[in-house]
Image 1 (tube, rainbow, N blue to C red):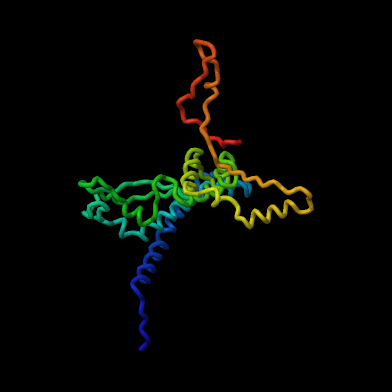
Image 2: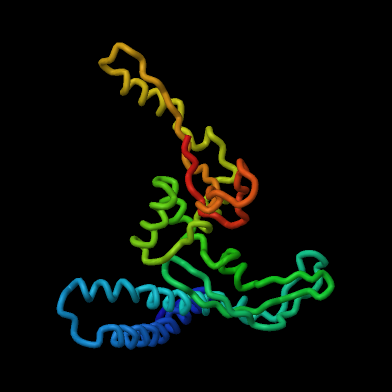
Amino acid sequence: MGTAEVISFEEVRARKQWDTLRQQLPERFDQWIDTLETQLHEPPSTFTEVTATVWALRQQLTGGITETIVAPVHRGEHDRKQVTCPRCDGVLRAREFVCRTVETMGGPVPLERPYCSCRLCRVGRYPFDEALGVVAGGKQRDRQKAAVHLVTEIPSDTAQSLFRDLTGVSFGSERLHTVTNQVAEHLTVLEVAPSREEITRRVAEGAAGRWRRPVVVLGIDGASVPTRPDSAREPREGQGRTRAKRARWRGQWRDAKG
């Protein structure tokens, strides 16, 4: 007799999940091919036409693949019927399934998950969201991280335009400003400024071969203020020398230069 092989329960479950994915992913790809066929009515004549069409439709494919992967991984949380209340330690029962679509770098991902609520404390929880690490709001951490990396290097207006051109997904100027402030909320000047060693190196590099010592200037970008419309500066009817008041509107945010 041969030697028996011991397989853990985790290995069996992981293998079963991958077997399920191998059956479901081709269906996702077939759906994407149908969409691609409608976009390319005739055989494309240039390589650019093919790449442009695939680039425009890629997130539909990658978002569907992501949805197919995350659903079975946390099947227990998806099918959960109850959870503990964080306030009264009571039992929160799943009352209904709520659908939402989250925006990721891989594309939009629709999620259907149970909502558990406590009638006494009026507290609700989404166990499936907590297991996945889904954050509040549509734009998830991967998209926020990419946007913040870009906006910390170049002006926000340019970052917003480049983000859309490079990734194919949009990021509103107001949302970009809010996310950047949230990330930098607890940062200080010492944390974003170069280290003592780096400043010394730059001073030595700038002073090499010169009689005068260089002037060290620390520039901090990212201070933005809301603007007011051009109509607020136009003459107004009534008494002369009356200054126009700031209009009550959500103006475009611009970098404060000084």
